[in-house]
Image (cartoon, rainbow, N blue to C red; front, side, top):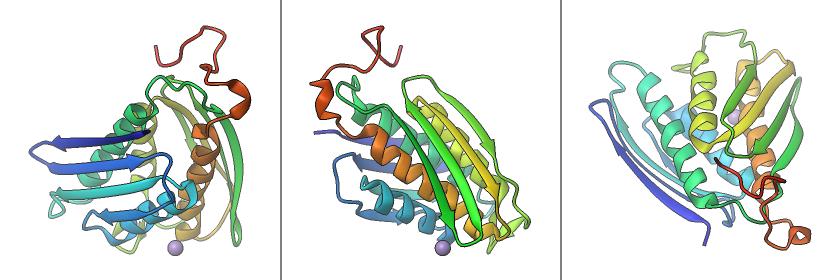
Length: 197
Ligand SMILES: [Mn+2]
């Protein structure tokens, strides 16, 4: 079973995340931030990873701590659920359109944490959500999941579409990269014989 639950509590946030990499895309996202829940719903739906997120954070300050800490916990959960990564496809690349926007997402599920994020948002906010937090979430997720992740919005005008194409692109890339590749017969996809260290 490729599942994991992470509980993470600080003075700023109290978070519980559960993932099932071999799920059907069921999302239960309750972060108190409507737009962020929308992004987590998309992530689950299009990755087919079941994702449950319960987060109680200091939203009276702003949305930064809650957004970042959910990224940390979700990344840790994915990493734990992957285990020794035997049999996974490992690499994937996706071009994700959303109306006028096009975003490219390339992932290496490798135990090598790295983020390249190139997306410019025309607006500072989507609803009450600061668009700069999209990068913060991707940074927290990539580092804690232990994945190399390159996200670039090639063009786009609408900030909601740009954010959505980033999350949907990650979803489809993750779906392909964590899928079990039947040709590998359970081998770890590395000439080193191991991933993640
Ligand atoms: Mn939307």
